[in-house]
Image (cartoon, rainbow, N blue to C red; front, side, top):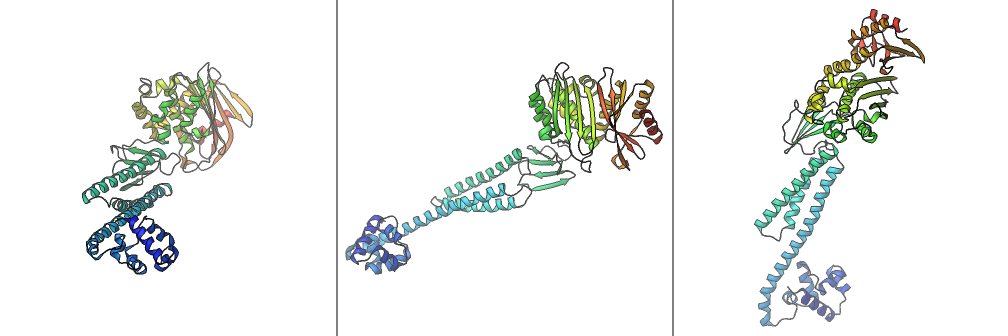
Length: 490
């Protein structure tokens, strides 16, 4: 259909009738711009307007579509041609409109999917609902966009693009889980356990561990090789404090302060790091923590500190090759707690089972997880190992004790008294949180010294109704032993 020829013909007939574009538009109920587009050959009048337009211009539809006045001989020949051209033009116009609608729907489907990722949390059901709607809209949009192709080709194109769209959605969701540490949006099943949720995705599983705790992290099981019993667990945020992240701080010298400080910040309790001090002559690292939370049900002050100390000490000795001594000072602003411990590499190397395997060939990730990450989840391993490596070791080296209360210092260097204090502590039993009836801070500290006059252990002493405690309610004994301890240090 020759739109330009038809347009010029409409212009000629309009002028012949002494009509302006505005007046013709008003008679037809269209805009003046529409008339201008017809006359310039940019588009054609709608089929519904052909009859009223021809009546106004006093011309037949056949002649209008031919773009010229026809003789009786030409009229019949042009009629069939114009009908076919009109049908083809209308089909092309509909296809063009479908493509425009298709692209609009495509934009809407992408917008809905972006909204599902940006606005709603992974745990919400809305992302899945919006994704389902966007997939339907996307499929409709592709069908409309490809309406100019034949059926088989359209089917192939629609299938491929739909699969790609679904693949992009799942890939985006996976990258979101990987980079933002969140639950997958598209899980066909969720399993809930104590402090753990398992999200089962068609392509992988995601474990949400330490759920709703400050140490919460997500573990992605791409091969679906783990279950709730075998998945790697850590009492800390494993993605931050695990060896896969810590290995980048592996260094032969502890004296690189920037590297050492960055490593400590990645380790558990790193957010409470105040400062570090490095004695280059003795390769002695001192770590000062200041924490500011209250003792509560979620955080077992004493046990969690032991777990953190043990994990950090073994990690630091494993990752910093020339580190020989570690001193940890911890002050709690809210709980009035102050603990200091010192430990050397030889103690860990000779007494911590598995350490020799951990540092084999630099550092072995498998043995790090086997001999540190896994055991650190065991309450009895933590308490017993901490006592053997820290408390017992320090007490065995003690040659002098200082009692500090209200800035008054009393030195205990009588061997019999020191041995009696050590025996009371050695023979005492671990005290559980539920065993405490009342707790009165005595504002009393005991400093334990070694033969080099170095403080190797600093403990806060508490007065408890039926027992005594050291270092965050560590020990409990009978009232006789308690009274004997206080009689010595007082």
